[in-house]
Length: 162
Image (cartoon, rainbow, N blue to C red; front, top):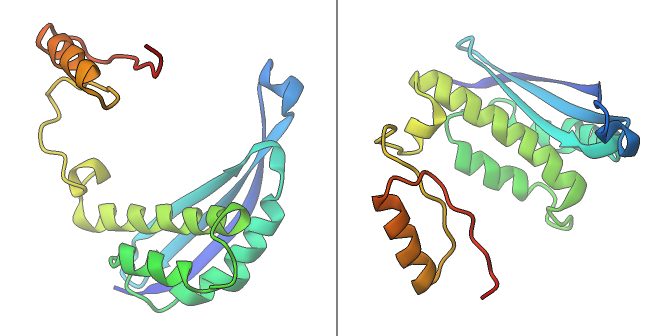
């Protein structure tokens, strides 16, 4: 399988009130990755209040897209490394990280579709019926978490204060 094209666009999404008072809209940088086998992956990055979205789109189109064309999209981790190394002088924060993220999400979308599996299974989740417990590290937190899990609690909020 090979990547044949990457189509990109910028979407402006109005925000509902009360969020709209602070952020009247957000912008999404959308990347649709097409393969020679007809599988398409959709990825995106969200720019709150639209800030920098045009720069993210430009970086994606001019620097990252050429690095992926012709590559096998199923080698997601290798392609992530390749995109990361495209511009060694640019820190992978802000604009570069947002652009890389949109393509990374699209590549994982292709991997899941090719395997005919949801990503949580592709990544190794095996027991979807088990109860889930969230907790922070620490002996007392771990013991409280285990105790809560035995009692059937599905989630816990963790605090860093004593």
